[in-house]
Amino acid sequence: MYHAGRGSEPVMVVGSSVRAVAVYIGQLRGDATSGWPCDPQGMPELPEVEAVRRQLEPVMVGARIARVELRRPDLRSPFPRRFAQRMQGATLLALSRRAKYLVASLSSGDTLLMHLGMSGSFRVPHASDGGDPHDHVVFRLASGIEVVFNDPRRFGFMDLVRTARVDQHASLRGLGPEPLSAAFDAAALARACAGKRTSLKAALLDQQVVAGLGNIYAVEALHVARLSPLRRASTIATAAGAPREAAERLVAAIKQVLEEAIDRQTSAPYRTDRFRVYDRERERCRRPRCPGVIRRRVQAGRSTFYCPVCQR
Ligand SMILES: [Zn+2]
Image (tube, rainbow, N blue to C red; front, side):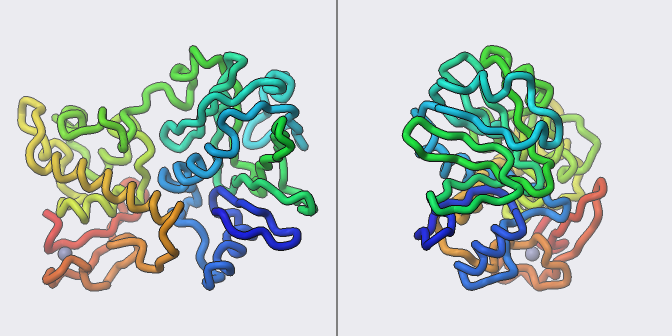
């Protein structure tokens, strides 16, 4: 979130739903109760992480890390040995995202892997920023700019691994295609769902089918694609595993809802009607001329919202 810095306020805050920061952003937008969209388990979803990446990229990529300051020995887990020292003097070559992980490759041959956890955020503070007790990691860039990682609940995660082996990291190994990549198309989705007896909704939350989609956007995409979350996953593929028309619709819908959500995070003004169907139990379906009423079901422990009339 970029906004005009005033006095001791940070010039930029990017991250998940840190309570204080979310309220602060909400207040600037005239709505004190709304933070970032998070599902009830509190994790930021893919669009929020992608928005953070896009906001950090111009600040950090190409920058040399002069110093890394750790204010505690761990987040969710301990920082690896010589974590700060190994990054000092390195230039950040690229900042990408894999599922909900930020992946920063360094000129030293190491890659910094970061997860926001439940309450992690970054900010680029003013000189007059007094700091916060939950500022746990400070990246001091050679330009003098500081990037501060704040995480009150400390479910965040940082690890430093050799770049050549980053795909083999326990957190990334076995992930399916990125939903916004060209590799994720109807053929790939149909192949992954062919023969699956689970519900289509459960398949979309399977990290091997598609990486990092998350509950909210799975629910939203199924509504856009007019597909019931309860139908069997295999029904979007032929017996031979080729995509049916439903697979084409679903892939397009997944890309659409994610892109809209990223756009909302990074540029478009805040809107309260950000979800079509998620959290709208007993409301009228928003599809034009659909007489349906939204239902809620729990599937694999997660809330599903759908319209029984237009989603088949
Ligand atoms: Zn409907």
